[in-house]
Length: 238
Ligand code: ADP
Ligand code: ADP
Image 1 (cartoon, protein in one colour):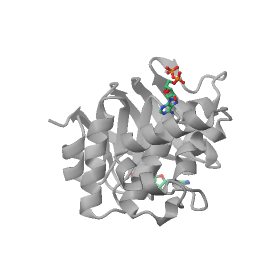
Image 2 (cartoon, protein in one colour; image 1 turned 180 degrees about the horizontal axis):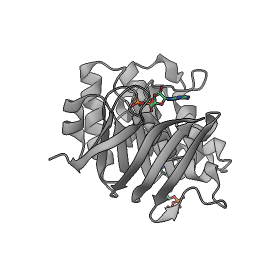
Image 3 (cartoon, protein in one colour; image 1 turned 60 degrees about the horizontal axis):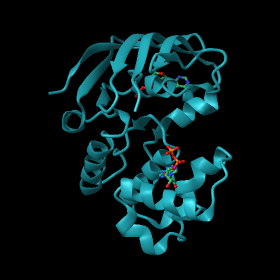
């Protein structure tokens, strides 16, 4: 787990400044919730923490993002490496539908072209599915497609896929918003457990969820139409 910081982050889509002057400092092994109304820039800030915004045409960033003090935007830094260090879990659980449960866990590692033996792969699959509290539910059908799982199971599978590349930071963009209440609680419990190994940032618009899972809360707001989102409060949750 590593510390992730932003300094005076301003994020633009073309000429539109979506987010203004965001400075946050997120400690290793903690959970920070980004909360605020729709459109205030929560996802926008989250995406800049692993340079995911770079896939959006016209998006650009001023300011700094530091991982244990290292500038993630320095010219020599490889964005692919950044995405390995800072993993992302999306709102809609999106296991690769044609891949088996097993292949889904290994997908990130394969993309990184790491050579692994069959037994190491078995190990990685089991450890990460255990880590995502999914192993007992799927161990007898690892070769079945990931798309056959329930929504909550699919989200845990995506978490296993994200942890398998061994990131330092896990970003989660509304990981529960497509889930029923029981599955939501399972993910919240899992976040609590993952905290001992990762620095976690979760975007949510659910205040109760923020108070259940986070150590610190970053409140964003927008002053009016066309205005950029700003950080209006940044404090310990409890
Ligand atoms: P939130 O996650 O808080 O709902 P977003 O980060 O999605 O907010 O959006 C912040 C602002 O940036 C909004 O005004 C939104 O319309 C705009 N925005 C988000 N994504 C894009 C994009 N790909 N292109 C242009 N504008 C965008
Ligand atoms: P390290 O160099 O950090 O000790 P290794 O690559 O030597 O890590 O692996 C140590 C052990 O962890 C091995 O048993 C290996 O199979 C297992 N392992 C490797 N990668 C992962 C992973 N992504 N998730 C879970 N276990 C892994």
